[in-house]
Amino acid sequence: MSKNNHSMMQRDLAVLWHPCTQMKDHETLPLIPIKKGDGIYLYDYDGNRYMDAISSWWVNAFGHNNPVISKAVKDQVDQLEHVILAGFSHEPVIELSEQLVAITPPGLNRVFYADNGSSGIEVALKMSFHYWLNTGKPQKTRFITLKNSYHGETLGSLAVGDVSLFKDTYAPLIQDVITVASPDCYLRPDGMSWEEHSRNMFAHMEEALARHAGEVCAVIVEPLIQCAGNMRMYHPVYLRLLREACDRHGVHLIADEIAVGFGRSGTMFACEQANISPDFLCLSKALTGGYLPMCAVLTHEHIYQAFYDDYASLRGFLHSHSYTGNPLACAAALATLSIFKNDNVIEKNKVLAQKMSNATRHFSDHPHIAEVRQTGMILAIEMVKNKQTKEPFPWQERRGQLVFEYALRNGILLRPAGNVVYFLPPYIITPEQIDELARVTYAGIDLATR
Image 1 (cartoon, rainbow, N blue to C red):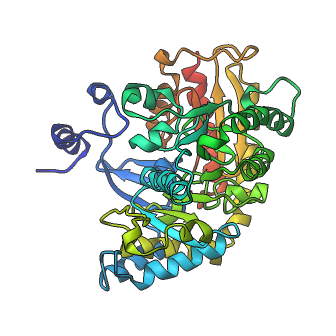
Image 2: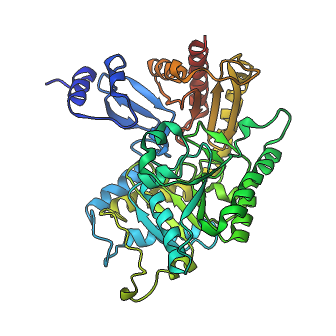
């Protein structure tokens, strides 16, 4: 059987159920089978290529088929593909843990591994709850989260999120949480700065902590950018205020940097911009450069010590995944960290981020674009029905889907979040490719908002 787009699509649709997809859409929108990737591009079976402007769901930091990461994984597979991490260890996981402790905010010196971001959030939630149980405060069982937040789609991580599209269906299955107004700066009054708005919005969090601290394990936030919540952004001052308040009220702070870690926010980790250390730091996505699933949850020594006891005490953290600390994923992560170290990535990204800003500066003049916002290597464009009132297009009109389809026809992979189009490209994108991305995106938005 010949392998082309049509034949591969037919084979796929006969057996697969795709994530985050209404499969009926593929009756009219062709599925695109990818044969290979190279650099910033993906290639289908008919020879078409697509600029991967979203890093394949935000994971592919240094391009497809990256020679450094590919070699590391190939070398590792000939040495050790996997070993149970309970009672055993291996060099890649030891070295990776040492490096993560060295580069993350101060005090995060214990590393626990999971298989993916949602699983890592589950680890942090369970560790926080279990810590308070082990230290004689069993009444602390609840979590505080921000409105419009997203932390994954397993039941625990879904509970602490607030994107109704993902959460509402499963409401009977998930725990009740305390939801606080977001510092989302898109909603700030005219003329107010990001910092002032974020400071003002912190009053809601302070009130919730003052009222509920005795029953709360932790506050969980996505530092600086609520990615799945339409790429809404806020000022680092909110994180500084939150760290201080959590300390005052005796509540843990969980920083979900699964999407924004590893240079995406403009610094290696978003928490650096507020000069804080969370109690738990969750890292995934770009950790392995987009090669293999892995999540690392970092925490402090005093939290680790609350579980350290004789077996008979039953105070241990008995959470596990079969592929915890997989050597191949560790090798990919180590190679990814070596690129950051050797290629001056953070500084180079500042130039690319400025280029993205310059290339989209004129977007703000479009009659149906309410805002172009940016934090580091994430840039978001909010399409609206009414620019003056920020009235959104009805979600049923799927304006973002129209942009997606136009971009695909013009060789670019975008995946808008509702009415928000965003750029989240691999860090190897060139200035010329940014110009092409901006040109196609503007034309797609212009077509989609008519």
